[in-house]
Image (cartoon, rainbow, N blue to C red; front, top):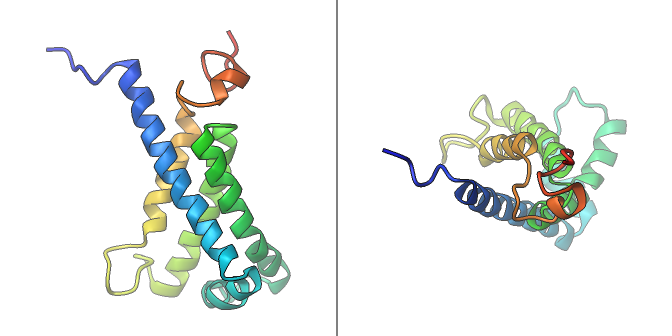
Length: 153
């Protein structure tokens, strides 16, 4: 029996839903850090999770960049514009957050209230979108051609 969901339209719809929800999550995460003031984020939550082995000269500029990276990357995912680049960049940001969480809270990355930190799941989702691309329901096909990003026909 044929699987009715194994159709390009369903694949594009699932990529759209996943991309928009992940983009919205990242956009709101970046906005939340900005809303409270970026210095407050850098000196508060970011400073608490900064590993001791990470030099201050690298950590502080990166801490100031995180809200902008999350906001811009989230917006790009929502629009489906330069999706692979945005998802690849967010994969690295989320991987750094996952490493910081593991450093602070052990292998699960989460305090005792949950099974593991949500950044692990978000990292995997961003990586998957970076590999697969935006699908046809995005701005990428308008810019890169009808077959998707980087594959002009």
